[in-house]
Length: 185
Image (cartoon, rainbow, N blue to C red; front, side, top):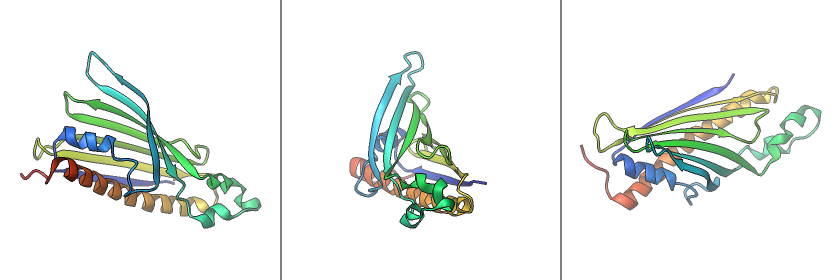
């Protein structure tokens, strides 16, 4: 079945500052679930100026303990949930000339049972060229866990919505610290 999560936010800061804050957002004491983020590849296309980055994030496994502790025949398929950390891969394409950055993320852990994919974009706001629009669409689907599929999808949906809002608050805090108050209209 699957669930979707959509986020839309306008940061009242210039594009370059918002992207810089995004790239240094984690790890952060405001979100202890993200343990580390490491850039594993970065290259610039000299003809277009587009900067490609691939990063790996290591996050704490936030699946509730009650779902991780069960064992027995009916729970064998969810034993994979017992990992301490989850890895995510993020790819981004930063285009400074067009003032946008596209991002694709997916989960590297639990791939035979779960699919988590996000597509995001930062771009200059249509309302005000000194503001930055952020749009994110995510989809989570879980298979192979029987009656737990729906429970896990509901949990994941709630957690990702809350995580997206927390990420926005972290970026707003970083932007305020680095740049001062948001730009007025």
